Length: 203
Picture (cartoon, one colour):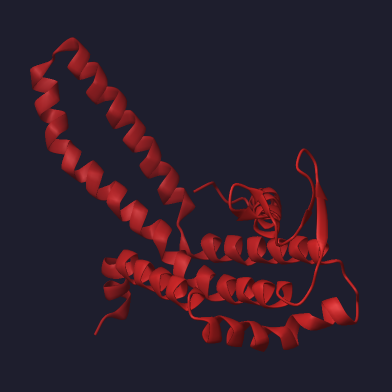
């Protein structure tokens, strides 16, 4: 059995299934807390021994997740092929739009015949982008479970520009807790720096 071929064909469904499984795990308290407790043996020294403030620890973990996510993507996605495919799609769209505006029926029919091939290539590109998601989730979800596990045991605040001082448990924007909002800011910012240093294109 060719597992690589199966993965190529069903990677999107496998990834969606795994994402659903992770979401389900989040709703099961004993599973979520069990994973968090297990991860605590790895990360607790940063809190108990090194006394790192929790908001700084979130910065460190967001940098860690940004680093391994970028590395996984770098070695599972062919960015050169992806860039070339995107350029071909742009050229096709430009040609097709010009043919429609000029009402060139002959050219439109020619491009229609090419359309299926271009769309298939874009679908394969989308599938390729989904491939690393499962690997990244395997590493990221336990970290989130640990953050939830630790946050249930402590009271910590953070002061953010424009948003003021919040308890990490409190909602900072709508229903988004301050710690998740802070994690998102750090992750997005640091990931861009890491991706630039690794010469990885945007997804």
